[in-house]
View (cartoon, rainbow, N blue to C red):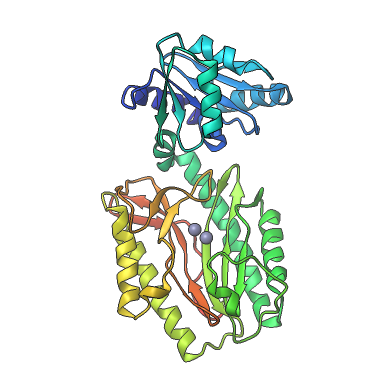
Length: 359
Ligand code: ZN
Ligand code: ZN
């Protein structure tokens, strides 16, 4: 029943954002509101109706998925007449909201051509704001997905000292997560060794992992739409150099301080400040070249973003990552990332793999 109650949350917000009805086109938002997973779905949320529009390929799927979610909606299956359906839902003079982050300029012009006499209003992040707070069903999916990635990593680390390639490890992680019940990896698994570890979003290559390499492993599982996210770093042969240990300890300290700072009511920007200031104390500020974290859920990077530019406040029930890292060109890098659920007085991690430089 959690999915079924969400259209009401949108309905309650229509007035606040200055529209009479909202057209939802972003797939993750369509799924969050109705459970529908097809590639072509549009929703119209009005004061008293929910209309779900798709094409003939999804006639049976949309009925089954809405039913499974307990969602009551008027289903319209069409290939050509979306404009007519929208025109019926939006009487002349109506203010019709479109998702500004998802509707292209071209699509906007199409809506305008379909709907003369209506006012088109750009609605920014309404669904994304609502999606930030995870309900118990969403949290449970994220926790179970995270446990699958934990399980896969615990098996893969035993191989790191045996001169595997980055791809060997990535493939093993992906296969183990699926064996443990995941639908798929929640993003392209990162295994970045040696100089490749200096690239935050490196793709696994056929490079052989040597014993003295730093290896960044960023891995998550997707379960029922919800994707986990975690990063650990190791020295493959288990014998870190002085510099490797220094980088590792600095990132561990920054990450722990960031996690410690997470709680209901804390400014999102503060978590980024805390991590950056610890790394600054270690002379590594310039080596931290990305934001500190992000929300997870139906999308792997979703609201809120924890960065120097963040303006929001953390609230109980949000699930965010805390993932400071340092990257030194040619020499490698270290990143440690946990996903945590924000609580009234702190947070609870949902990723539990041990943090240790020795695999
Ligand atoms: Zn990650
Ligand atoms: Zn992340």
